[in-house]
Figure 1 (cartoon, rainbow, N blue to C red):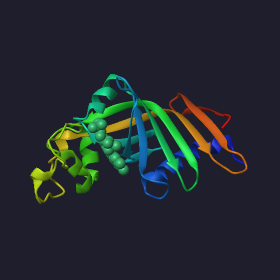
Figure 2: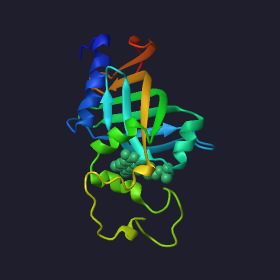
Figure 3: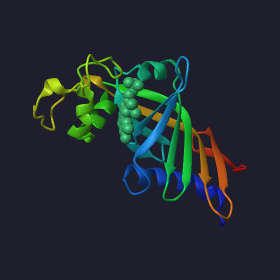
Length: 195
Ligand SMILES: Cc1cc2nc3c(=O)[nH]c(=O)nc-3n(C[C@H](O)[C@H](O)[C@H](O)COP(=O)(O)O)c2cc1C
């Protein structure tokens, strides 16, 4: 297995883009943020991959405690694994949270009702419930059209500005691992490291 270090960075972004489009691995990524006692880790849908800007985007509920955690320490680690190709990509960087602004509006418009429905729970995520439930029972079978803004007041967009990327390719003939750091915007320094 011969691979050029220079190709790995582009290959990683291409892989993430394919994942977002549902063409590779899964559309789900694991996000880790700093929290008070333990690292907070959870699965989210990879909503957007912008290789030229070195950004990835996911959506979350603005009422969630993790939004406060991220605001107070805006460093995130994201892990992606493609089980078919045996490739792991780890991204690190700083985030910006967009709420009730043009970015949020645009992302809201791009998302379908099935996703938007998640922002309609009566209470904030992680709020205790008296009994088992989805938090959406109060909606009954209410229908929403594409222009409906219900739930938008709870919708937040998280944009990660990636400043470090690590690539690991598992291979029966020997694993390969490379890491890259953004020295400045668009200047990436890479090296092979021991898998
Ligand atoms: C397949 C899958 C996809 C998910 N996608 C999202 C997502 O895009 N955004 C999100 O905030 N939570 C998503 N979740 C739920 C989170 O993993 C987490 O449980 C939720 O955000 C609760 O957060 P809280 O601890 O802040 O209450 C997803 C969970 C699964 C299993």
